[in-house]
Image 1 (spheres, rainbow, N blue to C red):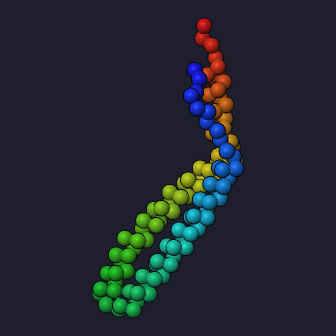
Image 2 (image 1 turned 135 degrees about the vertical axis):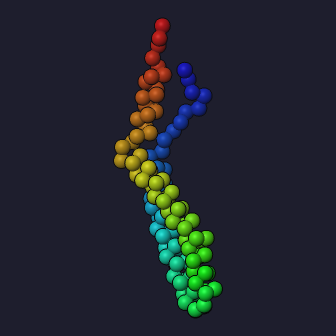
Image 3 (image 1 turned 90 degrees about the vertical axis):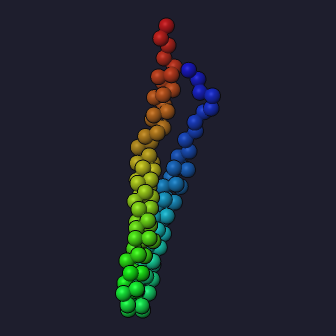
Amino acid sequence: MTLSHDICLDDAAFKTASSDMSALKTRAETLKTKLETMYKELATALDTPAGKQLELTAGDVLVKPIEDLSLVIQHISDTLTEINKTGRYKDIFIEFETVSNVSFS
């Protein structure tokens, strides 16, 4: 069995991606904090039932998706960190090459 295209793994790219994902998570957390503060201040300025509703709606509409996004970013970042520590995917391709070269005749 031969592959029509070789799959190349770039260790530097994995490290860069891991670092970039960590930075992205920090940016998402900063955005979340800013939005929470902004909507809290807006709700305080609008000290009415409408202001309270605005604060509650903002949490559901803007803050919750950013929290969910942060979880996804963290999972990707953790996976990239694991790849960098263990070389996990590289080992998979090495084993594949070994198995694909076995002759069953």
